[in-house]
Image (cartoon, rainbow, N blue to C red; front, side):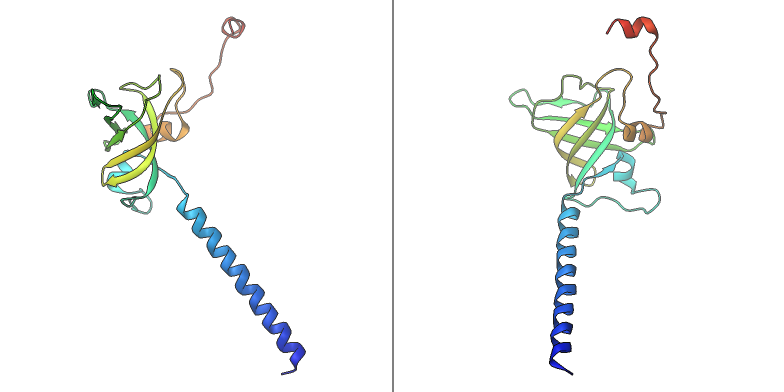
Length: 161
């Protein structure tokens, strides 16, 4: 093989190898920072279409309704534990060690983000509550089997703002 062709071939192979290495590192970084949304039923039984359950230690988001009567607060700290359920009967226990949002209460829709520590237990790093009586995050509304509709205000309601 001619030295000029050998040099070009070496350069092409190095370039392809470099692009492959960068692509694999990029995919690895994106995969480790990915937060997948699950409903309580999907955490317990797995996704409907694939049957895949989240793994212990995986960062996930779970959305549903806070089960009435499930909230337990530690009187000496900010630690709180509550259950989140959906319309299909799945239930996940969420533990959180920070201040809850002002609108958080039992029977409300929430989204909790954190790490799955057991099959049905989530250690939350963030808890989000819906912001008014009519809004529910689309993922939670879909999980609860409710329709997500745009609010229509009449002229009197618009003028009061």
